Length: 477
Image (cartoon, rainbow, N blue to C red; front, side, top):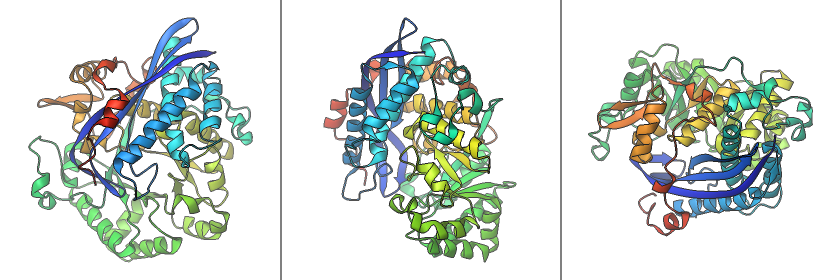
């Protein structure tokens, strides 16, 4: 099936946080959500498709010399470049994406950072997928199963030759996903830890113990800073709070965010945890360690002996180092076991990595990692992707730092609530994410299109030039 892409447009809005949001080396108080719109012809029908992403600084690129505004400007440029690569294309959705990816990411990099240049390609990819599904009145799951996209992972990784969407989609699809709550290094654990300036009268949790009791949390993503002694103390304190809240058999993952210079520091951290009762409880529920080394060192073959020695203690996952088509394959060859799934890195890439896991059949795995997906488009498209891959728990914390569906226009929020009452609910005067027993509904995966049934209020957003000229981000540091 072919799609003909007539135009790609963008609009954005700036979202305010309800709490200061520490993300890597920056603390955010606001950031833009970028929306893409693809106008296309599918099976003789004129259709539109949409996608969105929060433009978070200091993850795609971690240059301390650049400001939050500099980083977001790079993401905007990535989107505009991708629009040029897609516009006027005719072919299967997969073939069109493949050409755009080769041009913008696998070819000459505009920014010099693959994750930055891939951001725009992945954003437009999702809008194209949405348009395709709407053009044939299919959900993403059904379109993938029926080979609507022309997905051929063997063109990317030869060892997956012959597999198609129907071979890799999780069947039956999961009905819900366990929410894995991120606990950062600065996040208050108990009510007594909440600073006076962070107290909110909005009725929503601030401290970890509040979140656990309100939402029934059972899974947690813990951050490591690269300082073994301080990290061990912090992790043990978190374990105490989780135990005090009565959580049975908690699930833990650990994210180093490229913070360790070598594996010796990670062994030191694990040794410190093993030496303490609370630390041993963390290790008992620890499923994997994410991105321990800087991305520039992660795929270096000279690290293989160290990586294999460390992977004997804990499964290792790549995240920031997953910046090109064969990154996961190369990581597996030196001892890593898993790779993150993030829509901002690409849907077809995630599907290809799923195909690689199936072909290998040796326990290699994918995980869902995206802290900042916000309603409606980013969140629901991400949930739809992870449902197709059959992932059972997902890092999901945007609702904690951003004020519910206040991040989208009021009328759009009301329509989203009416269309997806399993995923959103009204609490007081605010529409918020509906979390039950620590889980989120995945019913959105059955929507015609790519994961959502509510219309997008494009007119309520602003042109990118207006956002760029504005004063947002000046309070972020």
